[in-house]
Length: 211
Image 1: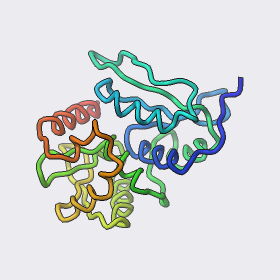
Image 2: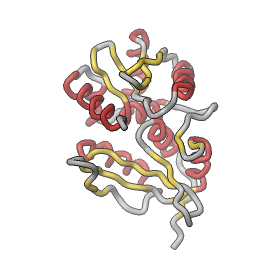
Image 3: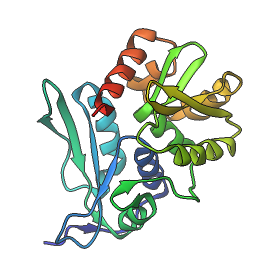
Image 4: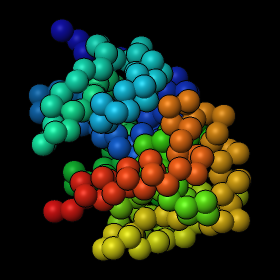
């Protein structure tokens, strides 16, 4: 049975790029011709996963399902069908099986919003982060340059043994004005200052990164 799909819409491509900057992964399974995208979040982010599925439904075979993960974690996930465009993105974002940041990348407000919904946090009123610890320092410097193209100034910030991106205080309003029209209601807490929700989430993310 053919499991490939045709062209992605501009909106779908933006959602996918934002997802790849965040928690999403492209995979090419042995025996398959092309790559597919895997979306995998905690069940606590069900509304967000459902939104992503709604955006990508035309390139998916079936909807999200729950799956028990490590420990008590319950995942909520779905995958897309294979696509030549996803294979092209796989070549762009992966080297030797590792996700990397390409030299040239088109990021729009939707991509920025999805990236923040995936990996953003706000621990204090003036401390807004993109938790980019999965990328090496050189790749994070590329992301800082991409943000500058939108007038967003940022810098590397060391979080214990990892580096991440901190949005400079002077650019927080600029950043939120760009992404807020595209942030879904269940993720609005990431924009508002709520140290309990955002900092606890960041602690979980850091714990998952530890060996």
